[in-house]
Amino acid sequence: MRICYVLDNDPAMSTGGTPIVVSYIRRYTGGDIMHGSRNILLNIILMLILPFRISAGRYDIVNIHDTHGYFYTFWPKRKKTVYTCHNLWKNYHRAVPPRSLNNRLKARISVFLEKRLLTKSDHITTVSSSVRTQIIGEYEINPEKITAIHNGVDTIMFKPGKKGDAFIWVGNNPELKGLQKAIDYSRKKNRKLIVIGIKGDSTKNVKYMGMVENSRMPCIYLMADTLLFFSKTEGHPLVPLEAAACGLNLIATKESNLEIFPLKNGAYNVDGRDAIKISRKYDWKLRSMKYSELFCKILKG
Image 1 (cartoon, rainbow, N blue to C red):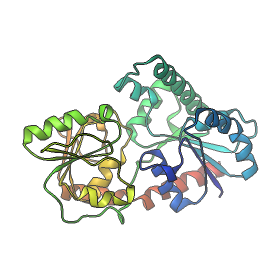
Image 2 (cartoon, rainbow, N blue to C red):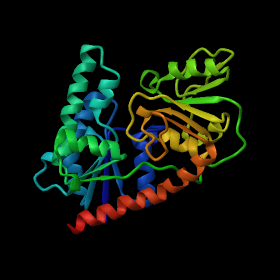
Image 3 (cartoon, rainbow, N blue to C red):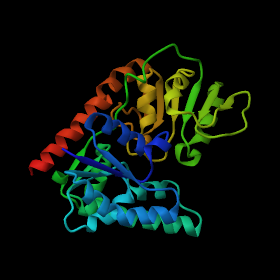
Image 4 (cartoon, rainbow, N blue to C red):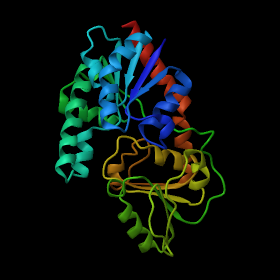
């Protein structure tokens, strides 16, 4: 079975998000990756020629993870196409409304492209049950056409160890991921907060460490004992899974959508020992097997 994965960004140039998800799935399923570019003009060209590149590759399954695969849905002789929805674009725009005219235009375009991918693909996978439910309700798509496969974690790379005495926040979008709320919470609890993913002016109680290579993250997580994750919307985020596999306690908002963990009193407050046990059930090897099984089922028709 030859698989082509389509996404916006090159996994080799990314430290998280969708590209990392695809990298892990591909590790166990094989296949090739076709991605876009951060250069707008080049990205448009790559989107337009994508159907020709896929056709030349003689693939059996095309798994689209981003809007980069939009034009392939028009291809008359396209292969079986599976669109993986990590979260609906409209959720992000509701959580953090675009302010400038340019960003509002980009928001409209992203929702428009996503709608076609959702309605024209042969099958849809979602990274959480909540996203699946929302797609069924808002786009009136047959539930049998949508399969929820939760994201996973590399439990060999991310594993328990001696932990530090601090809170940790990880992300690259402080407004969406609730950095200020994490700072306020840390101050209220009189504990140090380690901030990963963005730069800032460190203080006595808040230490900014900027961008960190993914290979260093297991050690970084163990600098703390608790992850603060106060996101405004998520599909099924990777950071809490990685922190859980390292044995950190998890404190997160309901909107962070850590649905494989128990929700109590409208929030997530998970003990690190329980987090480890749950995360081990979601190793990427097991998650990837579900993708392989689904692809085979779709091919058999």
